[in-house]
Image 1 (tube, rainbow, N blue to C red):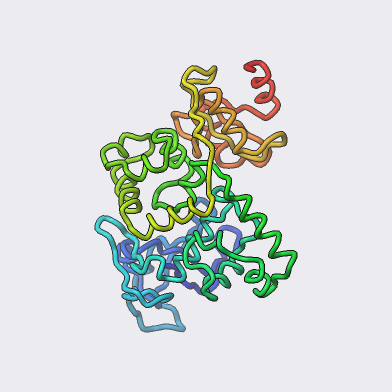
Image 2: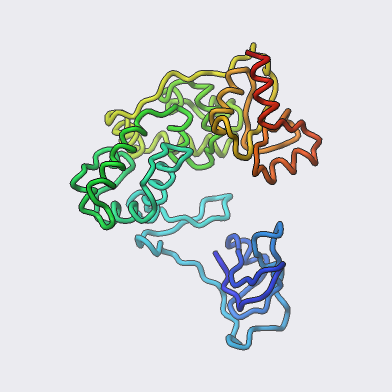
Length: 335
């Protein structure tokens, strides 16, 4: 939920919206419509409400009114529910909900997932609203005439998109696992799962206790993976994707014998000689583990231009920071 505010100058910018996080936070603050509130920019970035000014309401809305959450999804009309132990209220409509389906497709097509260039938000909206795509597998069933008939799409644009879709069929197992959009499974967890199970079938058949034995996987993540794997609709979509030609090479597990074995690296910023993904792959081939965030366990940070908060945190923790020139020299020595 987002609070709409009368514009106010905070931390150098004019703020008219502030996050309320979730129903628990609203209850904790005791905030209602019409209240005068104290606002700050958390981390000097995100506007958030800190507290309610007692006894004050805005002049334009003198009557306080409680914030009421919907009991039905505004996109599809399905009931909404809140899982035990969670603060978030979710639509239970699944892929029958157009809003959820669009979000799933956006994630699936994103650069770090299947990397389908040209499949943007407006086009995804059209494909779902026109009934051309009912699951991510339907992306691989699209034809040139179907695409060319859409708004702002002609022969050339549709041909380019189809070429990008076709190219995305060749991926990696970590990227495919990440693309499936399993809750709480980010890039690092997807990579850990791929390295542990090596095969998709083994992952989807794994019991909860085995899943919890994987790096980065705790009880909650294991529960989400089992929930995804046991859903018949998900089984159908995964089967369709494989039947439609999505494939990947055997998983190349990081060597435990390499010169960087036992180290954990984080790659950040823009590199000139290779992508961050390529750099991470090189690190793993040399025995290192890679992570998406800096912590006390991090051994080194490979930082290109534009490295921001991760570099700063590494400096604060006294972690070794390696620039690209040093990294390339290290590669030459090790190879």
